[in-house]
Length: 392
Image (tube, rainbow, N blue to C red; front, top):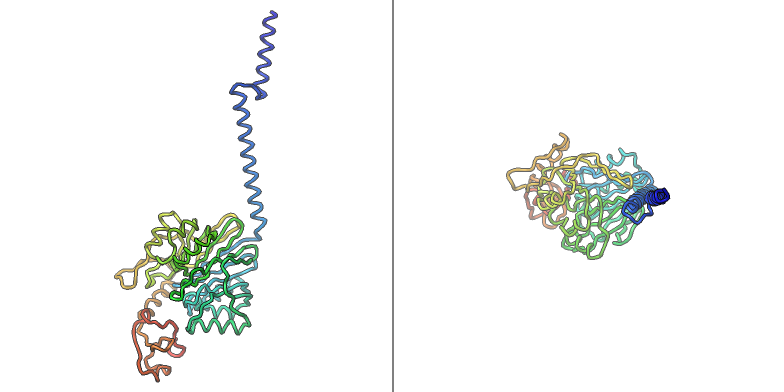
């Protein structure tokens, strides 16, 4: 009996040790590890919640990015709360379109306007925008060009009592709760105006957007060498999807989840090029494009990004000299606009070597003193500014 009592005591003691998780056998350790893992998971969950709370605390409202459909051009409206910025303003004929779009959002003041570079498809409508809104500051690259479009923008800036501010790569400024970092131009070449493109990255909470204008691969390489943080959730693909931009090394650094291409439906340049869209597809980057989906709106709450459209296709464009063109969807008004653009680009125009404009009428009064008048289709004309008299 005495031995039986001792055995029972030993058994009860062993059982208590096992239940307390302090035994030397495997059972105790397994329970201890389960508790430890559960604690670690709770700590990770709390940590992530804290990160989310911090991101939300640093964002007042939402960041909205509108990639406005201006056909073969760029125009991007960025709003954070009551703070607004415009990057580019499309072609000359897009001034009213962009102005009306901004007004439709209830906006009366633009804190910043960025003209990425002086090509007509980026600053063409900018003079109209400047005339119609209160503007705090204007950024344009340090380069001048002898075109009527460029002069019109400078005149509008002067008439508002403003001045042009040259971007400083590496600098930054605030747009409400969002931070805007200036990353370019770096490596600009006088032989190519695209290389003067202002590049900016906007960060809002844990989300970021990269805007590249028509920056070329050489500019992308320069930013990589500079060691800039190029990583972004959304990439505005450079130069309308041309194969002269969006190199593989650049995409390695940006690692975008989404890409946006702004180009005209059935444009004569074949944008977007096959090399570009094939690379985006290979990397499983969701692609949005104004030639297929019209105006594209991305909205960030500081943690996630949503779009007003479903992703578009990876179809590439066809050059104007090909027999067939890529078919895209769009409203009747947009199809009409793109059709008119193609007709306009094939129209016969007239110009002179020393003149700065092209003309629809060979007998235009401004051509009367010209001894040699050259003619050809508009798309091949070296003159990009329309005559004020005969081009309506």
